[in-house]
Each structure stands twice: as C-alpha cells, then as structure tokens.
Image 1 (spheres, rainbow, N blue to C red):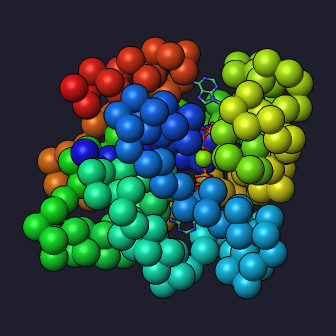
Image 2 (cartoon, rainbow, N blue to C red; image 1 turned 60 degrees about the vertical axis):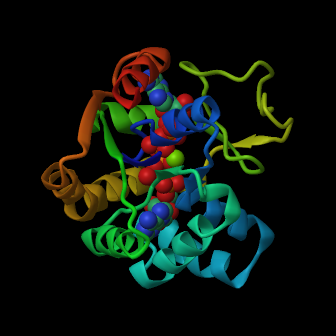
Length: 213
Ligand code: AP5
Ligand code: MG
C-alpha cells in the first residue's frame, strides 16, 4: 500500500503517518524528518535545506525529489510506504507519478488531513519534536509521559526552529500557493480522501483506517 499524506503544516500528517506506519508495518517517509536529521548531523544537504526551512520556504524540487526517490528505492519500501510532506508541489507529484508508472505502480491513497488556518498557529507553538526519531508531541493535546523526553526513544524533545509564529505564517502561505493544488491533482487521479483533522488524534486515525480498509 502506497499512501500520500496531504495537509497544511501542523495538520497532523506526521502524527497520523506514524500511526499508519505502525499499524500496516510500512515505513514512514518524511522529507522534513530526512532534512532535520541531516541538519542535526551537519551534512551539506542539511546546511542547504536549513537555509530554506528556517524561512518557511520549500527546499528546491530538484534536491527534494532526488532524496525522496533514493529513499523509496530502498528495500524496506518494496511493500509500500506512507509519504509525509512529499509531494508538496505539482512538479514533485508528477515526478513521483512517472517514477512509479515506470514500474507499473501507483499511489493508492492521498489522504488530506483538513485543519483550518486558525487552528494551526496555536497548535505549532505547543508542538515538541524528537530530533532523533521524529516523533511529535503537543504539550496539551499529546503530552509525552515525561516532560521534555521522547516516549519512544528517550531523546530530548525540542521546539522546532520553524515553529516560530512568523515562520508558521509563511509556511501556511507557501502551503496555500504551492501545495494545496495537489488536492485537486489527486482528486483528478480519483484517489483523494479527506478527513477532518480538528477532532481527537485517535478519532482522526479511526477515520483513516476506515478508508484504508
Ligand atoms: P515538514 O516537516 O513536512 O513540516 P510541515 O508540512 O510544515 O508539517 P509539520 O511537520 O509542521 O506538521 P504535521 O502535519 O506533520 O503535524 P504534526 O503531526 O507534527 O517540513 C518542514 C520543512 O521542510 C518545510 O517547510 C520545507 O522547507 C521542507 N520540506 C519538507 N518536505 C519538502 C518537500 N517535499 N519539498 C520542499 N520542501 C520540503 O502535528 C502538529 C502538532 O499538532 C503536534 O504538536 C501534534 O501533537 C498536534 N496534533 C496532531 N494532531 C492533532 C489533533 N487531531 N488534535 C490536536 N493536536 C494535534
Ligand atoms: Mg510533520
């Protein structure tokens, strides 16, 4: 099963993608997590990505596509995957579609986690993220068992550099201009499913599972 998660920054793509990955035993592939891991390790890729991410801009398609295609070519992706944060532009979606078509393959579901802009900025300021495994928490809605520590891997939780309110507003603007058109793209492909992302995390997940089953 191959799934694409759509939705605004902070809609809960990562939260739901991790739950899907666990339930269906497929890898969770997040371009944002790959970039953050590279930033943490100080690689050249990380340095380049950071200059865009800190401004709330998209990392250029050419670079992002290369990273993503490399990742999904790995062995663990052969039975499917859940993509979180990719594609984010129409050209990225076209490249993915063409690459899969060459292997007689396709994306099965595009799940749009729908959350209005008003809810987003508030959510982001409460988010805490694990730099080691990418797990996300929220100080009110999804707190870790021990404050500041990841339940899954025991690493320290941080407030992401791009979660400052002014950067979040720019990410939302970029989302509406460049990423939202993908909703129409996948609707035309006949695989778009929309879920309400404003309800409780568990209920959003139950609705997604109902779609995937
Ligand atoms: P990326 O890491 O993908 O960030 P994003 O799309 O902005 O999305 P977020 O990770 O911020 O939000 P999310 O939807 O995963 O929400 P989460 O589950 O954490 O990308 C970062 C940057 O990298 C981009 O800006 C860009 O520069 C670059 N980049 C990445 N991919 C790229 C690409 N393909 N092309 C070009 N550039 C790219 O949830 C948010 C918060 O809400 C959490 O605190 C969570 O606990 C809480 N929450 C979740 N669900 C609920 C709920 N139902 N109710 C209450 N709280 C909830
Ligand atoms: Mg995320």
